[in-house]
Length: 149
Image (tube, rainbow, N blue to C red; front, side, top):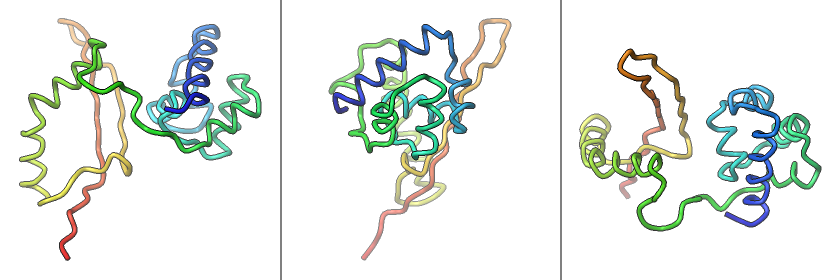
C-alpha cells in the first residue's frame, strides 16, 4: 500500500475512534456497503469522487485526503507469509483446511475457472446463539471460466 493511503487509513481509524463511529454508519453516509467502505477507508479500494466527497465531509477530511480516497490502490495490505493476527490467521486457516474443498466444489458446479475477487460482494452479520454469538460471512463473486483458445 502506498504511504498516502496508509497514512489516511490511520487518520480515518483515529477519527472513527474519537467520534465513536461504526463502519456501518460510515458506509451509510458514503452510500455504499459497509464492508466495501471499510476496505476503501483502509486503502484497499478506490472510491468514486461522489463517494469520496461524502466520506470526506462526514469524517472531516481535507481535499487531499478526499483525492487520496479516489486513487487506485496497490492492493494487498498483509505482509508475506502466514498472518500473525489471530483473527486474520483464522481466515488463512480456513483456506488451508477448506481451500481444496471449495476448489473441488466450485469446479464441479461451474467448471474450470475462478471466483472473482473483483466482481465480488461480501456481507457480515452477527447471529445470536445461547452458546456464544456467531459470525456469519456471506461472500459471492462472479464465476470466471478459464479461456480456451
